[in-house]
Length: 241
Image 1: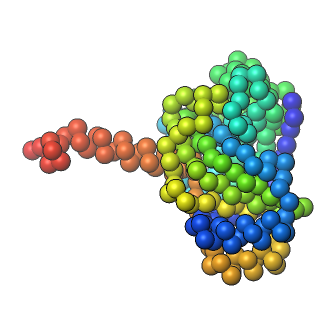
Image 2: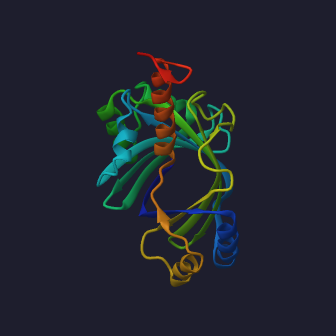
């Protein structure tokens, strides 16, 4: 089992096509593609019966945490994937992840096995604390990733989600989460941004935003549920009295 620990700021920006074209040109000159330079990412989020993790996240608290299973591309049950705890405290993101086979990740979430490493023990505690964790939403997106020292920049496009077929071996289809040409840029850095990057953002009028892929998918489904409940008591759009 492989283990990774990350501690950094993660700052998000939405770009239109024009701004993306301007920025990616400079990024290609200043940075190098990283290990997962061009990939399709699948992130399967786990939550409780009452969706407490995503609901708490949407309240924008000082501290929040999530559990997800991630693969780069399609993964069968014997493929190695990453089980991750992601925590955010006072604006700093802390991520702990362990590499294991997808089939073992599902054995773990169903309380059939424990994870026997330091990071595994943290994830064991997370599962036991929340008790009713199960797969809730799968997010899929196409990513370009660049790095330079402790600076990492990613660009996510074609962001989609689904609430069925909640494993990483069922295909890369899903419902669109954002507009077709939207690009979500994330700057991930453990210290301060370099001056050239600050200047690049200013020149292109790019401003940080608050956006959670999992949170957005939950809001879409919640609003659809409320609408369907409303129409149970309506006929042709008019309330029954």
